[in-house]
Length: 243
Image (tube, rainbow, N blue to C red; front, side):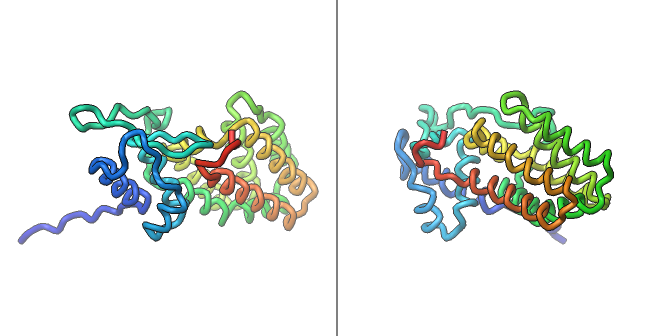
């Protein structure tokens, strides 16, 4: 009897990237030329712009294209042997195996659970846990590893929610984010000092609501923060003045 073959689960953005890569190899998108805008690609492919964004970032990591924020996405030249130029590395720093889960899936999952976690923290956090949240917020530097302090802030809120399973789920989602090369490259393009400053102000509102023991305000502040992150990462590549 013939053995059944394992079924691979391919992410939508990976399928989009493969289709665009095939067209680049076929010469439909010539070297040096600019790819169609994300909105146009999304309409042609009948997918969301978020999926197109992830696909373009994946193609950049693989060396097919160069993303120039404020200008657009340009096709890289192939070598004479038809192969790609060596891509820039974008892998987890600790050498762990990368994940292919898209950054927008991860952020949308955070949006489902972190606002409620903030509301619970406002109700249940001990004085010591609130002090830890405050310390993480006050330690956030806009120039030295802000992402480390950002994770510490959200992790401290998770630890203060009073639900170990929820805290573990949030920790795992953050871990998956650190293993996503596409997430890292998106941050490189769009998360500037100005963006970190906006995030710090949003953190201040979350902290104030938790300190005031106001779960409704804490929930809304966390929701607005995560929606803001999604909006910033969805800025048009071709928009002028992003950086």
